[in-house]
Amino acid sequence: MKKLAYIFLSIILITGCQPKDLEPPKLDISPQDSIIECSNVKPAIISVLATAQEDITSFKIETNPIIFRFDTTFPAFTHRYIDSFVIKIPEGIELPSDSIITASFTVSDPYNSSTVVKYLRVVDAYPDLIEDTIILHTPLTGKSFFDLATRQILDTTAEPGSFDIAFVVSNDGAYTLTSPDAPWLQTTLEDQGITYNSEAQRITKMNRSLVDYDAMDDRYIYYMTVTERYLYNTPSYGIGVEALSLGNTIIFQAQDGRKGAIKVVGMQPADSAIILGIKYQWRPAK
Image (cartoon, rainbow, N blue to C red; front, side, top):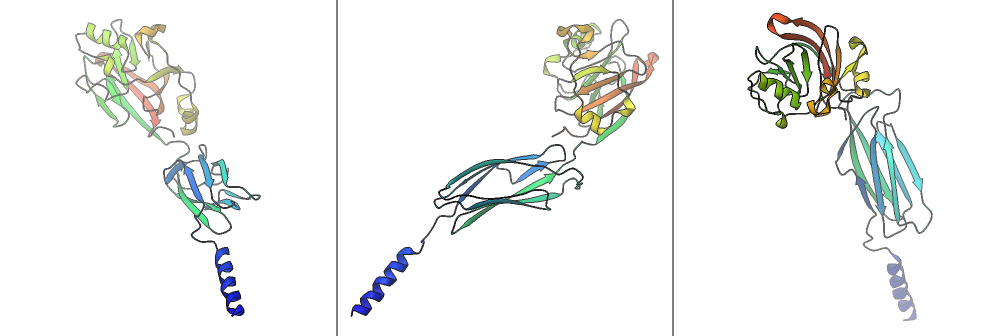
């Protein structure tokens, strides 16, 4: 009888020592998006919060292909771990645009592990450039507005807010490029009998540049800073560059963030038109 009691008590003690229904550690990764963009110049910045009822024993990050690896262990009585990581594509490693890097984040306690998988999508480090030659006419003679997104040349019937660059020959005969929202543009067009509302238009930063237009590649334009220049140095006139002549180079940044450059390659006084070489990012830099 004593032997049976001893066996029964032993079973109770052993069963009582077994972990039951232990809650696995929790892992919260930010940003919440399952796919995160990264490039050679812009890394993925990821925040980690790990919590557990039991002691956290380890945390690790592994990527495939291997561009980043992290592994650490913890002393006893660690139940909360907070950290942030900068995951970047190392110098010298070239991965095709839109390729996917799998990143696995794993936290463990003595009994369980939890893993969260994120996907890093490789994007162009420097957005490719669209290069074109366009002819703009002053609004009295033809189409004078250019939309970067659609690559369309538009006339004064265009919907407000549908273009990024405006061209006009001013009342004194100066060839001028302006931001579509420039109050001076509205006044000049009204003086020429054309109705125009500058308040509903996009804002494009513009300025002159002394850098060789042909030397401006995707890398240069990515890092280029555009500060706005005011027409006739008068802020109330709005942004633009007046008195253009052959060979002038203008840099710009559109409202959506994409940047580019313009070179005056021709002028047609008889048609009040200007011929422009233009190059700009096909998408805003990220």
